[in-house]
Image 1 (cartoon, rainbow, N blue to C red):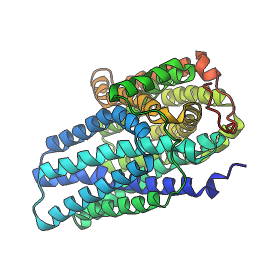
Image 2 (cartoon, rainbow, N blue to C red; image 1 turned 45 degrees about the vertical axis):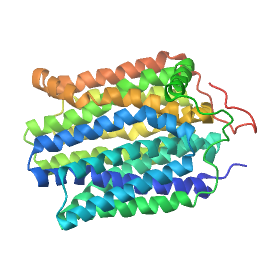
Image 3 (spheres, helix red, strand yellow; image 1 turned 135 degrees about the vertical axis):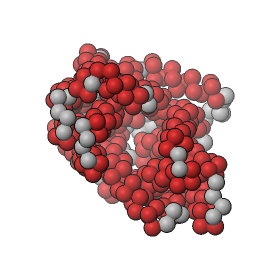
Length: 411
């Protein structure tokens, strides 16, 4: 009999370790640009550093998938945390001694970004080895809750610590990664099945992951549904902030809007398991996509903080959709391909989403705020229509415990 997640020691240790890692990363997400601004006084350079980090995460995504399937996953998680501990201790000490430089800041931030991508990919790849097959959607939902929770707590904590002393958020990051290191070290269950095939070339192994993703009808559907859905939602969130700013909404209220939206995602992550139990997975995915279209269209004519309410409702629904899609992906993908398949999906989705701020800015400038929100709602409608007609989404079946010694069968 499969253990409940709350009694699964290995899963809880991994979940707690990644919670600490995510908290450190979200503190850095605010503290790094603040430090660059303090060193250079240039918003342009602060923005350039942010772009460098975004490009780093994108470039590392596919190689991280290959590594997650090729190397020992537990040791890889430990190595990621060890690198970040050294990096942030170094950065904190250079700040304390007055020898910090922009080059050092960028180097540490790039290392952190690369390690975060690898850690997250390995963690997802290891899930199917640590929890029961039928528990994967619930496990992904808990990871969604962790992500939204640390996104809410990390930036305010990072800002508070930076105000008390510029080195403090980075030294706190080092502590968070040290605690994460200890958590992973305590995991005893294997995080992958034994490998019987010798490693091949990086490109060959990556191509194998891409072929598997394109060859499975469910995974092909995810590759079509996820990118416009992700781009549409992230574009709406960014556009809403710009629209409110152009309507002279006070910064404090704009911050409240961001908090409302983030809180919607956190509540939705806790509600996801209940939604998954009440609705068949294809119905759940399609219903959420169409509900998101309606809610975003409802937000379009609003130019006050009231627009945050339907957008927050979209974020409340999205964790259940993510949990269903990525939980099912983990269940049907062979262990030796887990890292590569999830990295291909996230790469496709994040590549489109990375252009959403630029597109939002151009649209707001030329067609106005309401039309911009409708354009992004239309992108989500593309995902909803694709999910509705997709045989891959309709092929989703309730997940059952895996038969011992049998390979998961693609749905």
